[in-house]
Amino acid sequence: MTSQSQGIHQLLQAEKRAKDKLEEAKKKNGCASRKEKRLKQAKEEAMAEIDQYRMQKEKEFRLTQSKVMGSQSNLSEEIEEQTQGKIKELSGSYNKYVESVLKQLLNIVCDVKPEIHVNYRATN
Image 1 (cartoon, rainbow, N blue to C red):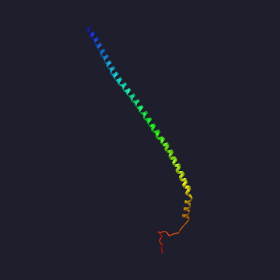
Image 2 (image 1 turned 90 degrees about the horizontal axis):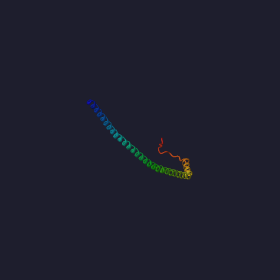
Image 3 (image 1 turned 45 degrees about the vertical axis):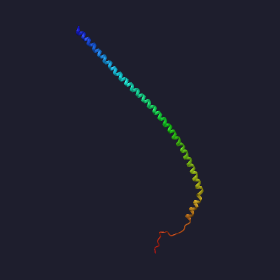
Image 4 (image 1 turned 180 degrees about the vertical axis):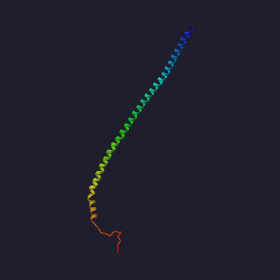
C-alpha cells in the first residue's frame, strides 16, 4: 500500500510540476504577448505619425507649388506682352526706315566708280 501511495504521490507531484510549467509558459507567452501588443501599438502609432507628417508636407508642397505656378503664369503673361510690344516697335521701325535704306543700298550698288585696286601691280 505504501508503494501505491508513493506512486499516487509521485503522480500528484508530476501533475503539479506540469501545471507549474504550463503556468510559467503562459506567463512567458503572456509577457511575449504583451510585448507583441506593445510593438504592434508602437508600429501603429509610428504609421499614424508618418501619415500625419506626410499629409503636412504634401500640403506645404501644394501651397508652394501653387505660389510658384501662379507666379510662372504671371511671368509668361508679362513676357508675352513684352514680346508683342517689341514686335510692334520693330515693325514700326522697319516701316519707317525701309525706303531710305533701300535707296541707300541701290545708290551704293548702282553708283559704280571704277578704281584700281590697292594691291594691283602694273607689269611692264
